[in-house]
Length: 277
Image (cartoon, rainbow, N blue to C red; front, side):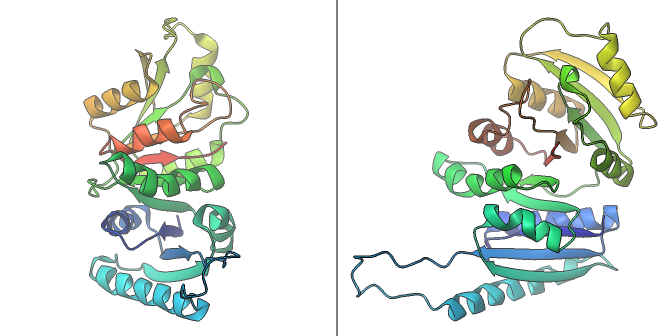
C-alpha cells in the first residue's frame, strides 16, 4: 500500500481520520499520505445583489493550501518513519473529483472520517463520506469520530454468500488481506430468515476457493436488520475492521444507499472498509 489519500475539511473528525491513517500507514508500510482539500468556488447567480462580496479564486486556493500546511505541521510528529506527508487542493466537488484524484495520485486507499450525533451532523458531514464511497473505485476506509487507531488484527468480512461470484473484487480484497495479515471472519446475514447455513455447499466452496490461504472462519446469523446483525456480531468478536463489498443487487444492494450507510457508519466505533466490485 504505497499511497493513502485523506480528504479533509479541517474539522476535528478529519484530523482524527488523518491520525488513524498515520497509524495505518505504519502497519501497512505506506510510503506516502496525501492530505486533500476540495474547495468549490461558488459561481455567481444572476439577479443576486451586487453588494454581496465575490470570492477571489486565488485567495480561496491560498487559504486552502495554508490550512493544509497547518494540518501537515500538526501531524508531522506522528508521521511514521519512511512515510512522506504531502497535500493537494483543487477547485472541485469532492465526490465528483475523487476517482480522478485517486488515479492521478496512484492511491491504494482513501481514508475519511465520519461523525455520530445529530441528524444534521449526519447530513452535513456524512453525505460527503457516503458520496465518496459511491463515486470512486478506490477502496474507502470510513473512520468514526471516536475511533482511535490500533493495529488491525481481526477483520469481519460481511458478505452475501449467495452473491459471491465473478464480480467479487478478488485482487484488491486479497491485497488488503495480505497487507493486514489479520484473522478473517466471514459473516453472512440472512435477513429473510431462510436458514442459510453450513449445508450450503456451493456458496462455501466458492468462498473457500476465493479465500484459499487466508483460513477464514465462517459465521451465519439470522437478522432482519442487516446493519444490526453486522454491528452486533462485530462488537461481540471485538473486530478491528468491518469489510464490505457494496453491490448493485442482492442482500447488500441497499447498504450503501445514504440511509443505510449513515446508519452503519454513524453508530459504530469500528472502522468500515468498502471495496467496490
